[in-house]
Length: 315
Image 1: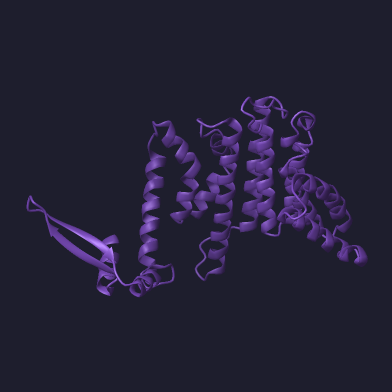
Image 2 (image 1 turned 90 degrees about the vertical axis):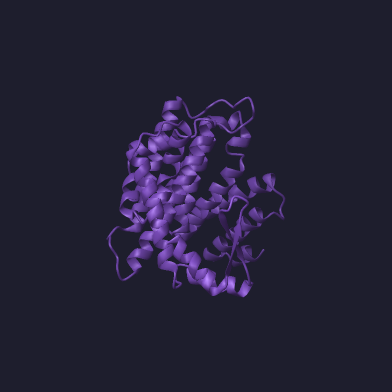
């Protein structure tokens, strides 16, 4: 496939092929770009909807499928290779078009536990957040792919993308809870290098889950994860490590996210109570001219307007 694409680009004039005879008599070939207009035209041909798009997409799928099968069928002796497999295997499965298989592995609790334990060279909390962030990215990607496939005329699956998101995030949250229990307590002492404790990373991971659900208008489901993040940060750490508790930027963001969820569910009074807590905190953390503070102030105005307090909303 690669040779065919190169030949096509050369015929269009986008690539220039030059052959050189080396001192030993062997011939080497180099390729270089030429006119920018031809380059753009050739690029458009190779996009997903271009004439050569199917060829490029097929090559990418074949390569990723081979990688997935090779990693799945062989024992990875290197710790680094095993960590990469756990962290990135779902991404390669999605690129290979293995949507059903990727959903299955994302809903596997044993795989999820192993994934949160990867990146052994990193601190435990940082490893949890890195794995959770990758998991959220995988969920968002597979949900998008499933939605696009269902919207097409040749849908091969009847999987509900929304339900996949909800189920997978529940499994991730359960894995986070198990990791916290293994640590012994939520109130992990602060590290000597002043890095965030495990509980802060766990709260951050739940905030990522909530934000992803809210981005898909799943506000009722997101509300639980926002509240869970707030509950962790409201814990025992609040009296000892304010920067990683209910005085933190994460706490302010979770308060605002939860307020928006309440507002979208037409609970304006609940939203106003949360915003009344969020604004003073953000004013302490940032100046009044910072985007975060102005965003919250705007949300407060919307909530006041929705509750028919027009004078207060204007001021």
